[in-house]
Image (cartoon, rainbow, N blue to C red; front, side, top):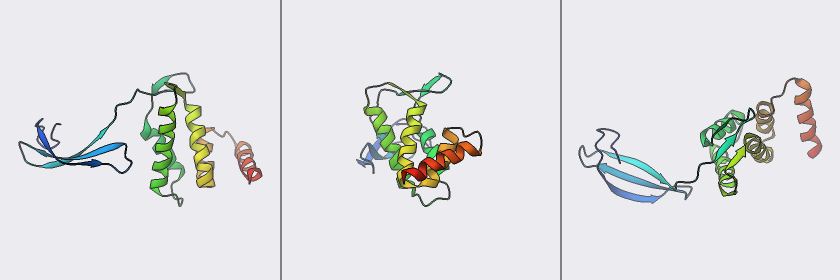
Length: 151
């Protein structure tokens, strides 16, 4: 592992333990050249998941894009970061455990909306307005009416 301070490529592991989610290992390392300490996180390498977008282009699944969209939808709402992180983990786990190597962006969006609906309705409507590309106030009202009739 390369030292982030002096770029020396030899270090020793001082401490190793599971990270919070149990999916990663957190390691404290010490550079053998400069003696400074740093932390690394080790994860299992998985088969890449490909996202098929609306325009039929394909790109690797990016967890940070999902997290960013959820954070934006939940901005200034009483939704703890841990909950958003949990939703992201849950969706990523569902996608990785399915036998499909390609998944549509629509499927990811639906999974996100499904999770947000039960947590915070305002965040759900915010996410849906961007995801479903509401064109005018009528589409917005249709989504709100669906939400009200489900209650």
